[in-house]
Length: 249
Image (cartoon, rainbow, N blue to C red):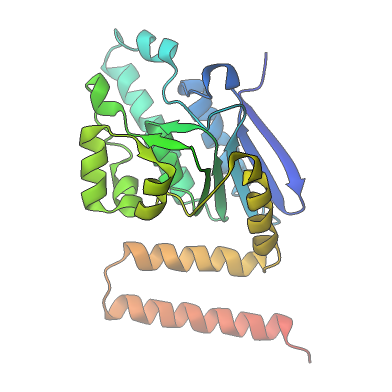
């Protein structure tokens, strides 16, 4: 049976995770969602990693839900729907809270929950002709599980518009709104990814993890004196650790 997820190490200290269902545009089902959660849970424990690269094989990043899986769930009971919802919510949370810098590259389309996955990544590169669609309302559904991450990445106004209208974002619109950081011609996206990876892996792995943790803390806590005190303590601890380990005696 073909692996639905490929994991390899194209560069030192870097792991690439590839959605591998190209015959159906890397559409996701419950199996792929669970496999992704397990893979990222395992990778989070690897202290040697400086970056994880998420991508898709074939012409698209992810076309959305697997049509056969979606059809099979039409007559499911509440228990099956709740299980699916819990797993998808867990996937978004796992990606958003992943302690290692997370880079995604997008060829072709990214639809439905795939947009939420990208919102949870730290860096997103896309091809000039890539597109992004929140198609849930077209099927009478609601992008409820990814809504917190859509708001964080797009802002509330854009999240409202694109969630309700189902209008496709082209790569330029996605970049302007903050979902995508850089766009490039299709045949140059791996080169751009390599340039980004080279910059990242040249840095201290501990510093990268601490930077991500501090930004997450600042983004999700109330901005008050307590947060400032926490940040001051963290900054002091980091400086002391650095001086103890990196300065010559």
